[in-house]
Length: 132
Figure 1 (cartoon, rainbow, N blue to C red):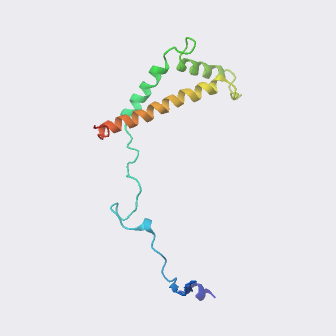
Figure 2 (figure 1 turned 120 degrees about the vertical axis):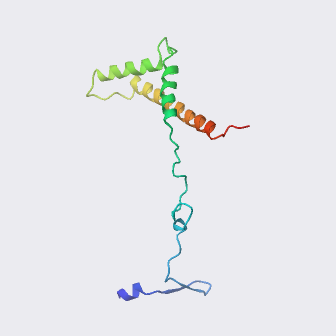
Figure 3 (figure 1 turned 90 degrees about the vertical axis):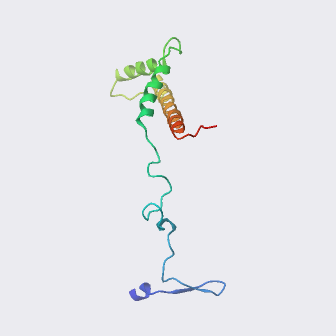
């Protein structure tokens, strides 16, 4: 019985042509390429991480978010104030209706948008994407 599964077999299709199943089809992802025999979809350093962007982003977001624009208070101030309020009753988690959740989402959304635009702008400029 085991020899039946190990031996090559032939399959007949509807059109009457016979196909041998002795050799498996070639995997296109295993074709030898320019990267040492490995198929890759992206460059090895696809993120192109740059610490300048992180540094400028961490300065570039807290500065505008510290402008007192919400009833005379800043977004950063409201966020840090709500952290203190929630830490006052620490073992109990914050309620979903707490202002902490709103300031947390808004502050981090602004930070990630700033970092994303910073990465696009900084890398775009260094790699000449914006030449017109």
